[in-house]
Image (cartoon, rainbow, N blue to C red; front, side, top):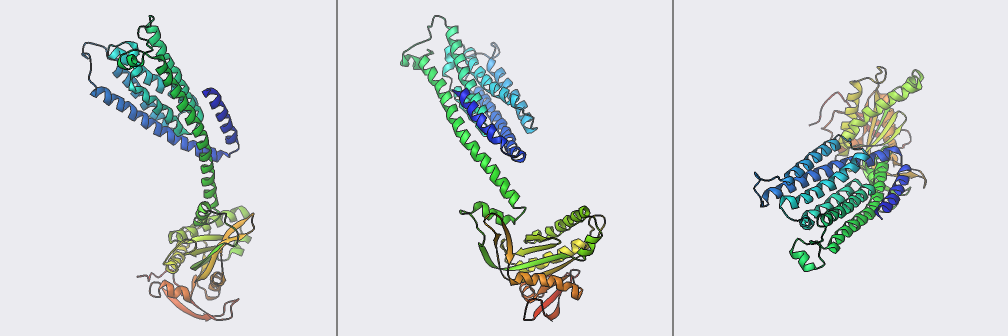
Length: 449
């Protein structure tokens, strides 16, 4: 029964595994490797418990005069467990060794139980009543930590066969059957063997194994689903902000296009100076590598000061502070990020020794952040007139020869005395009827208190 069950479930799992990409299978394998280390530590704890119980238990012989097999069995078990744990830590446990480990666990346990009748000079049937048999269920359930039915089934089958062999030894050791009884009271009050009771143990082992195998088969499906979802969320966070990916993962309903959050937010818009000239003088492969280096360098200070990058628009970067990630000091943090970006760019080169400079515009206002697109394809972005103003301020840097320009709202909310602001004046921004007061920030002057 266990063989058929294991074959069916294992075949099902293998067919399902073939449908998963290698990186997901690798993620599951790492979980299993971690489980094998845990299994090894639990086994080590079990053998230490055995040793402690043996040391504390009263002896019926003089240790100097007689051979004591229990310590030898415990020592062999301890050595095997240490070797197995070492291999598990080094991730050197092939399938065949795991099967050997299953057999060794049960064999050493039953071998320890078998030595009891020699250790205590009792009939062979004496060991059948040893409560140490209960540890077999620990060894079977330990295999469930790996989330593979075949090893649970193997442990249960080996345990059932092993206990039948232990019963057979008693019968062959007592050919006249003097120790076999049908009287339950005699069985409970003597060393007699009750076949029905022993078969009950075998049946219990098989039933527990079967139930664990079925439960494990269902849990394996949940494990695979969990790995797939966590991997998808991790991949998704590369295309949308991490906070948005987490919202998508934990949302109790499917998030649709048009769902958004309105919030006072500071927007930072950064662009590469003279990018068109750069494109003309650089091969495409070198250009994309240089641009990726630039984006990586700029992203670090933005994220360090609590900003969220919403879009990479060619050579431009759009970041928001306080949406979707809450930040009470968002205006000041956006200014800090802008200053840090300029310092990073001035201190290094990119690609084949190319110096890059950036123009940055920062504005604070009420904007909306949400999913935009169709039912089949969505992207996260921030929208609003104040987002457009940040982009316009970035472009005005070229006209005024500045590196960082901020709006009146950012200037006031960030704190006029915290940074080296200089008022440029009121300017006419393209697309706006009213004049806009703008300020430059000197990235080379540290004025923050």
